[in-house]
Structures are given as C-alpha cells and as structure tokens.
Length: 102
Image (cartoon, rainbow, N blue to C red; front, side):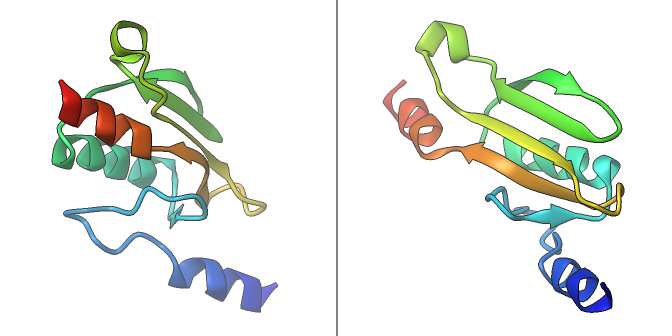
C-alpha cells in the first residue's frame, strides 16, 4: 500500500498557475481539486457549471454546453483512501477548438 500511495503523491498537482486536467491527474483533496479546476478555467478563459458535487466527487460541464453544443466535461472522485481526488473523465480538445471558433 505504501508504494501505491507514493506513486499517487508523485503525480499530484504541483503547478499552481496551470494545473493539469488530464485523466489520472491527482489532487490532495476535493478542496484543492476545486481550486485547481477554477484556476484551469481562468487560465483557459471559460466558465463551467457543476452538475454534481459532494465530498467524494465532482462533475462539471462547459457553461456553453447548450448554446454551442460544447462537449467539455470533467468528472473527478476520491480514490480508495477517500481523500485523494483523481480525474476520471476529461473531454477537452473539442472545448478548446469551439472557443477558438467563436
């Protein structure tokens, strides 16, 4: 178990200006993940809506989903330790392309 925890910790968010939002990215807890997601939205100049949020998971989608049919979304949940948060689903490429077209 100790080795697994070290692997997870090694991949945790360490770039506060441009946090990674890729499948498998991990964050120390849900508060840190929400801050990273907010920073990611600010950095990439878009807004998102929260579909579901709780102490163990967060699902969000682009606020322009209806207007532009934007497929951007993210789903993150806690790992086995019930504290560390991992990104499970992240659809981003089309979101960026749609923003560039507007």
